[in-house]
Image (cartoon, rainbow, N blue to C red; front, side, top):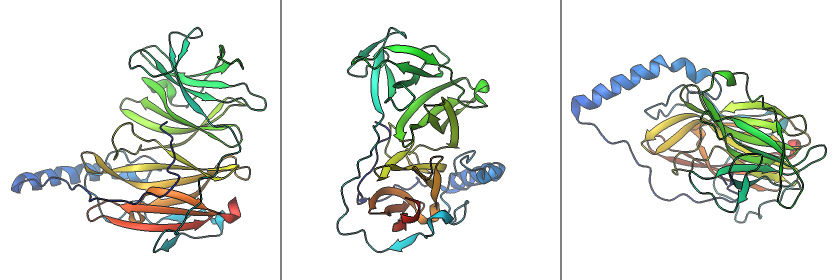
Length: 326
């Protein structure tokens, strides 16, 4: 599933691939064109979550400034020299997870199938039942102008599609040529983090919080999926901070380093818990402090292994005490 969390640190190996050098005048000509493009689009970098266009050269100075930590944590980001010798196993959530399934045919009479078949099936994100809401399915419509659909399911062993819900995804949705769900994961309080791809007219990605009880969508941010590991691209990741709290990690502001290698202006870590049902952005990590490569919880402390991949790569280890917000 796309929303697979890295629940334990992964030590980095190997070097960073550099951009190919251009000979003589061609190199300088390309540089001048790219600098002009960046100057033209510079205002976009001030908008949260929307870089406007890729930065073609990895500057060592972050356009978004320093990393920030939510004041509610009463803490600060601490630079560490090494990861703990032993990290505990990932915490299990107290609420049921979202799952991925596959359908063949037209709704409401489509058939569940065991495996995805390109061109024949649709991916479905299944949301378990909760207090005041039946089990749900989130998927894309079959027509050429794809749209996000939400269906209520029966509680049968093989669920039936009972009722289609109205979907008011975004105030700007009327101008989109298509929209479709990309990834989903369940959050505390019967909420769902849902990544949606849309075309307006170019392809973009946005992250929404969907509340199944009141059938409402709230845009959290425009996002940049992690592309460096190749498809399928990862729009966001989650990590259980406690049995009833979940951390959500996503990127904004893509910086292209080479054809298939990217850094990001900001990494966002948002906490969802009974204390913070709407989500609290506990950390906004600027590029100068690296992008998250792996993360894990030790008690109430979040550990991060990050890498600044621009030019000469640099690795960091950070910790952040979340005791006051958990």
